[in-house]
Amino acid sequence: MIRRLARNAEGTTAVEFALTAPFFIVLVFSIGQYGLFLWTRLGLQHAVDLSARCASLMQTTCPDTGSTQAYAVSQAYGLNIDPSVFSVSKDACGQNVTAAYTYTIAIPFLPSMPVNIAATSCFPTY
Image (cartoon, rainbow, N blue to C red):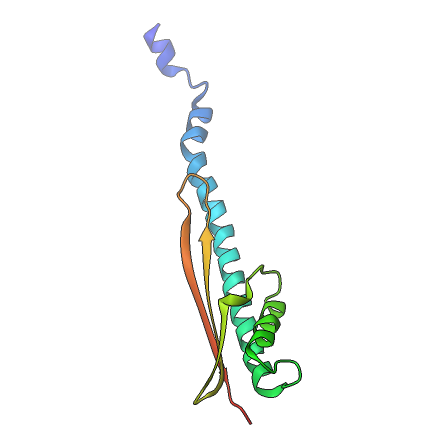
């Protein structure tokens, strides 16, 4: 009886799948979250670059800090960002726009991890 049970391989596939599935799920979701993180980072940098240019060159569109922040939010395509994330200042290099944003990475079976994203851009004033 014991020899017969030792040779029986029924159910081993299900056991192997149960042992390895969490690792594959974490791997797939990690790749997706990393892609979303990069998309958020690039969207934030894009918004900062264009709003620094707007503050420097387009005085009718971005005459003050509030309108420059609103312009930055409009240029952060697909991101739901508060205007207070962006700060505008006039530095030696020209119009300087910086952004500080906290992105939360959420992967199944792991605790959520906040990651700080910072972007800055300075455009010369002519």
